[in-house]
Image 1: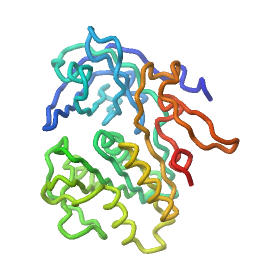
Image 2: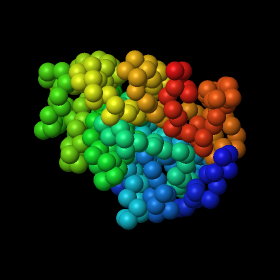
Image 3: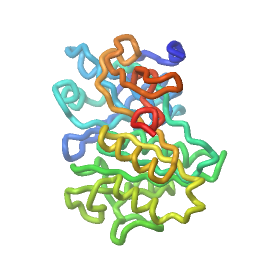
Length: 293
């Protein structure tokens, strides 16, 4: 299994096709990278060279991928000189792309009522997963995407036109792209943004789950990506309702391909505790393996 990723990761010179800037020093880049786009799955990431003068790459979750058009999109917030340099790149620039890397989410058709929880820079995999679920026909998928942020969201927020039973009154802020797919979304923040849930996104998830009829829980599966405290809270929530849960971990990475083991985390296995590399053994893990069951 340690070598399962070999032959699946491509190195290519990508071309920056589009650059969008959002408040809070957040950016969405669309990069022409056909090899990466052809194999990208929700939860996988790309390791990008930020600037020719900065040798260390940066791992960024894939927001969307179009295998036919040959592009990927990444969303990031500027933290440090590397991402500042990446944000300053111009359309037409060449970016070295290593990817897609990692094991993605694995939704089970027997549980089509999927609750997707994204926090901050953990939003991209949830958008990618929702888009792919909306296009699948192997089950009657019903994704609900809940997103939390304490800075402005990296998209134009609009009132939802999709009714979501169990949502608190007045919580109608949504992501227009997901609405266009027919996927309901709701937003949470403690920053006082209009029409958003006032609190943690996991608290909003709890209120929605608490509203479900008991027979629906057999259809529910939870997926999450975000800061570690949010993932721990999500795992606790899943345990309280007896639900399966997959989480995508955020971790500092150097090589991104399993060689340095600098991103290793401890997980529970049938044989006892073990160290797993977030880059190639993850970044998606069973929540109970990481946070306990």
